[in-house]
Length: 262
Image (cartoon, rainbow, N blue to C red; front, side):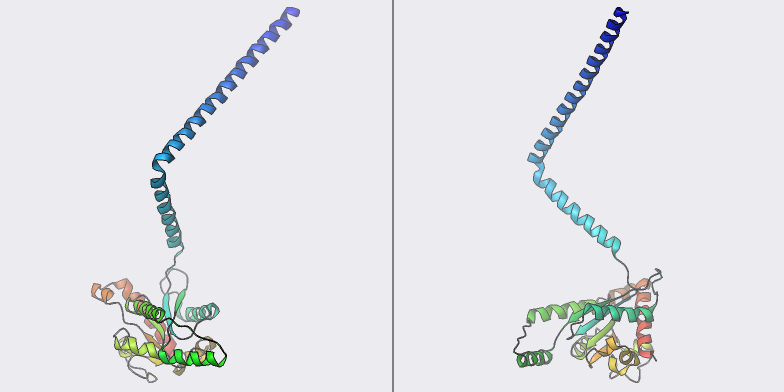
């Protein structure tokens, strides 16, 4: 009996020692592997630090751009306000909602979206009036001519590029873009010149039922003109059917604005 106990004890001790040695060997092996990895990383970072930083930098940019592109939507309508009024975000949102109600789903994606861009540009006369009003309140107005030049450049890009055909423009900038050939003749896009048009290219928003009925539009300056930019020259010569349909969608909304009746 005692012999059996000793034999069992020896067996357990052998099993324990072999298991302990195995675990120790595993731990030791892991320590050696970790040390090798750390050494390799140190060596890699020493030799390839800047190439790695540059690659990671561009990788972050690519990922960010990819995410933005995935979120980007294709609006049914692109419109722009160009004038002296600084529109609030709530006003822009209200205008977009109204235009969305009139437009409907024009691109067939199951959503209705209108994107209204606002560009603030003051004429010299408007700027002078603003300065006088500020002086009466013991205040001052600073308006950088370089910023106005940049704003005009931006507005010209939106209109001449064909990306934003529907326009609500202050008379001052309207006359400049009309003379540059950026605006479309009303008879060309509507088939005839509307009776309430003040010239061949535009209609005062205040002279439309639409501009009078919706307060957010009636609050725009009285000389705000509703008009259409010409179709992109490149798109026209390429006979791009998709761009042509998109432009016609804007013409359809433009017609609804002019024909709106309470």
